[in-house]
Amino acid sequence: MVKKERIPVIDVLTMMATILVVMGHHKFLSPLADWYYPYAKIIYSFHMGFFMTLSGFLIKYSFPTFCRRKDYFSKKAKKFIPAYFVVGLVASLLKFESMKQFGYNIFMLFVSPIEGPIQIIWYIYVLLIFYALSPVVFKITTKRTSISIHRFTNGCCFLYIYAHAFLR
Image (cartoon, rainbow, N blue to C red; front, side):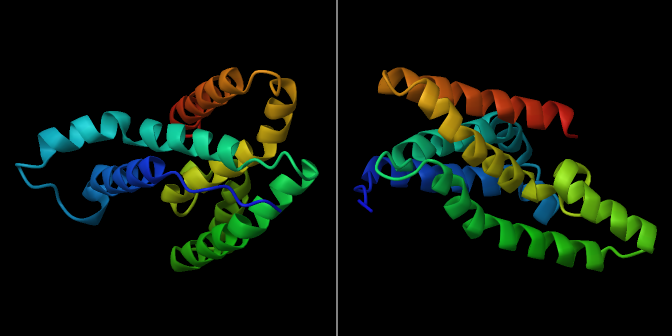
């Protein structure tokens, strides 16, 4: 397996995007201060789109052309799925009211995490969808790498808009 070089600019942009995501979700951590409110609205308007665009680029950049494509999703899934379900299970247990509610919370982890016990993990759910779809997208667009990166990034933005608008 060939390891690709890190791109320092992408590392810096990812760090900036992470900081913006935390700042954009600051309202969940504590009450908003008067000085912060105007900035929060601006940050909230683009922070996840920025983060997802970087994710789309990194998915394409890290996609292996040297091994079987079906292994790509399974390697990524092994990395994210256990943590996703542990966090979802713990959140469901902490918000336990009845067996019916608990069952609903677990079901929502699979169907629509934005309605589940811990809404902030929706991004991992969408990221797993990206990982599952990326081999198909890249197989269709491998002839023109620059166009495929552009299309995949646009697809990531579309899925973000879909997730944000319809999974609420």
